Amino acid sequence: MDKGKVLIVSLCLIAVGFLFFGLVPASADANPSGQGKSGLKEAREDLEQKLAAVPGFAGIAHSDEQGQIVVFVEDEPAKGKVPDSHLGFPVRKEVTGPFRALGVQVMDRPAISPLYQGAYDRKGVVRPLVGGISLSALAGKRYIYAGTLGVVTAGNEILTNAHVIAMNPDNNGWLKVGTPVIQPGSLDGGLTAANRAGALKKIYPITWNKPVSTNKADAAIASIDAAVGSVIGAQLAADNTNLYPISGTDTVSVGDVVRKSGRTTGVTTNTVALNNVSTWVDYGSGKKAYFTDQVFVWQPFILGGDSGGVVDKGGKVVGIDFASGGNYAVVSKISYVISGLGISVGP
Image 1: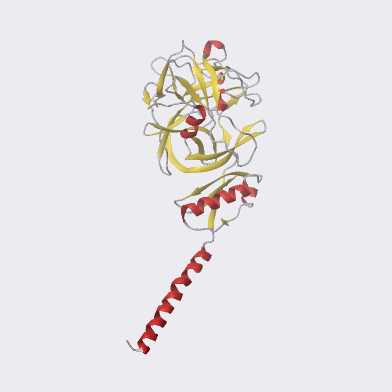
Image 2: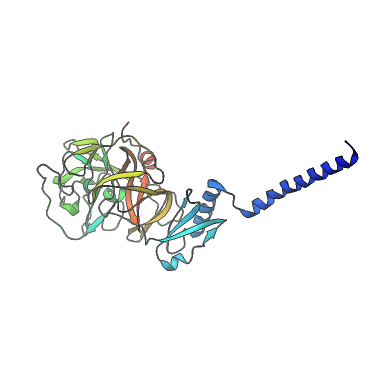
């Protein structure tokens, strides 16, 4: 090859080299936070640290499917405190109002509901114990209340929310281990020791009023008295007569269809909206708790009194519901409940 051709080839190679290496810094400048799921997650976590203590902030998540951060706020003024983008990712803002724990609590004292013939009243006496029925602790002098018995565990224990069987309805203080648990709950007439089903056994601890804390679940278990029958893993079906089984555990993804059986709304289904949410939950009496890595399910799914309902996907347990706000029901993942309480929901 003569010198002229060599020079032309060399110049071409140098030009290609400049084009290739010139692309690298241009790409990096276009997205300083990094592309992909890891970059989105890091951007969300950074924004969460900045917003968690801001008044009116309700919660945050990120959508891998849409490539955006989602911020929930209590009102329009709070919405104005949230940026439209963060570290190169768009931010979607939703006004949901506050998220609240879903116990039902009133001062009136109704008469006890009878045991139905042929079908069970979810708010009445149900024996043997199954998931989806009224429950509370025998506590409180000012208020009476009720939530949902989630499921009878493989160890023959009652699983439900901590705020259903472990909190005093008058002041939201913790009740002592051994406090009687009644079925139906006091709101539904279970006002005496004659309605005792068991006793508070263990509480999943909750840290109050601290932003970006490590709360993972609102859950507690109670022992079942020897004289009270129960059916492990059984849920009261939509017809209030038959039962359906749940056993084992699973995880959820956005778009999955899930189901629950609850005191107030019975058996309902809807789809998972988000599965990586951090959110404040208001318990009243000046107590709020910040929960991380929660699941949001589209409403309608739960109402007041459904707190403690166990959520399943195709018969496998995925979580336990405990709060709602805006268009979302809040569900704690069952993996945290199991590890925190040392229980099993079946093989």
